[in-house]
Length: 411
Ligand code: SAH
Ligand code: SF4
Image 1 (cartoon, rainbow, N blue to C red):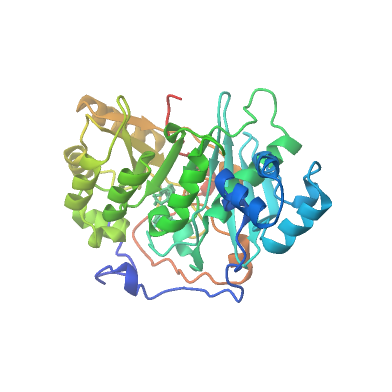
Image 2 (image 1 turned 90 degrees about the vertical axis):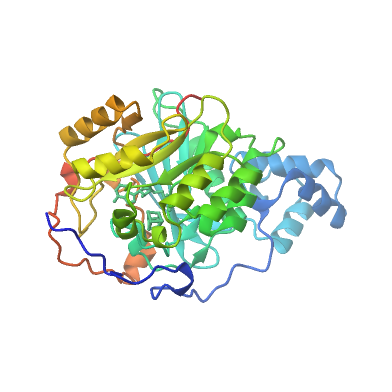
């Protein structure tokens, strides 16, 4: 099969000079601080500032942990405090515009941001855990040609408050409408695998990680949080230094030639840099970095691709997660067959590399990896990608299953 040439072709990749699709929303993030970004310590300071007793801080935080951020719904705080919070802060930085529920329990939410624009969030429930997949940016600048999110006009980084507000809104939804009994109805895990490149938004992502892990806040162990990145190596190192949560890498190719095409940030941070960053990333015992590998028919699933992948992997610290390609309207690739994915996994295992093929979730509502794209954007007709004619086959979406890397498997 002829190799697809990406539309950015031979352009030397440089994130700072990407020639595309930056949409400015009229509204800017509000000058007001966002309530979901407050830690308990900061709430104490806020109460002091406005002349309220310290115990009110805990009350407000307790409401937030139930998913309630509107002061008018915080029943045990005074009307005066409700008014003060409403006037001084942006209490609900996002609101639910639409929710879609999959037959397997997966829920996809479209949230409208108070400052304009919208993002998507996904809940993936299982028997013993429920994972929230959060967005970190409005769109993505990084332009991986197989990714639907990458087709969206980029219009900014999410703040920590907007990231945490996604988790809180899902909590509220689960409380209002629990899942069937066979599924877990409390958020146990958070993965940064929604729209955007988390490590291109270090401020919002680092602050939100600290809030998720805060002993007085959402109390999620670092083992229950996963950041997925396309490989911004200096930022991987900084993440390891300050908030060493589980790491997933969107690898998708084991050679620079192919990765330059499939994950264009590779032109800036090639595989040798990525290898060094991964080898230095702090890992608790018996934990692994996940290398995500979306399997594209005739593109990265050939014997030479397997050899390059096997050569790149450090089997002592990394495992490979083979992902079904989720087709999207006019996507320029086709996914490898299930059978071929299983064979590919077995061949990796024979080389003593841990490899898994993930099961499908939420594909009937386009809730899977790489399928997130806000409706607002579609309505505004900001889509700028026109798939090039390539040798890649088109595949009916219903014939392609999808799946999520759910972060840590063991807890
Ligand atoms: N930007 C980050 C976080 C997004 S996570 C990153 O790239 O890691 C989304 C995951 O889904 C990434 O591994 C991405 O490579 C993968 N993905 C993107 N498009 C996909 C598609 N159409 N089918 C399957 N996986 C896809
Ligand atoms: Fe952005 Fe990740 Fe999609 Fe690449 S795969 S375009 S980095 S969201």
